Length: 436
Image (tube, rainbow, N blue to C red; front, side, top):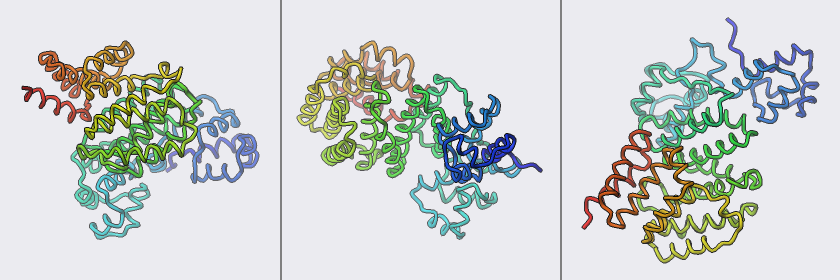
């Protein structure tokens, strides 16, 4: 039986069909012979620019180009195993389940009375356990019903994403992952979807719109890891964002980079513990990160830094310090500050004003045209805008209108699975019930 074609076999066949040696093709692509040899032996894969040069050097047609890109993006195990021998999903899900429980491979192996090396092979999809072993593994790892069904029933197979998908379609996929981050059941299934979408976005990262979606996905992935208390993995993604050159996209890179700094501070405070904010320690971490990344110590970043620090002080009920931080943020002069303002900045500022006892000013910001447009496009923005408006109206004692907006918030959460906001909305609803 012929084995399914992999990226390596496709590359080697294409090279031999053109009568090229590894050295000749490597020279045309602009890489070393060793690098090309690693691609053909499945040790490594080319980056997006290298893949483009490779396809140009081989003069590949459209069909071959699509095939090569698909093979680069697919998880290796789904490509290399014959259909009847494929596991129901890659071992990545098993690894995700283990990490969610905070267990090492040796701890899981000891509980199952098996060798650690065998478990490592399962997680790499180099081997696959029997149904009995899988059942025991699900119990040890505390898998949710959806995950158990996927593992035992083979109902979940990652589908390759379309290479030529439009930026609009990709944006919807990113939004779906953003909305799913706070859900508890089946959370480990998201690990594979994140990796699959990230692979496609990286391959098309030369397109400005797709590159910015990749940055968004990195932030969402960092938040996802923080919710699971996998802080070291979260920091890997924030570090990637901190390395984005500012001049790549002046309209958005500064906010993205500061968002990365914000997420890195999650290492200081578990998100699942309400009120566990430590603003003074966080300020030290932020200052350190800004000092380490001198290329982003620019007015936009400094303004966002002080704004976020003010938010932390508000959460710690240190309102005087919060006021000073926000005033310092607003006092930083820069001609481009208004130009780069984003819906996220508007929402954060409005929330700060409401918490500082200025609900009317917060409402004015929430009524800005930029938020009206974004709210119609993004359920996430619409939910937060609705929630903050309700919050301001509660402060203004506009009970009837606030109650209606709270109802709308619950409806939006149900319609778009935005469970990540439920705690905030529940708190506001509780306040409404106990208003004097």
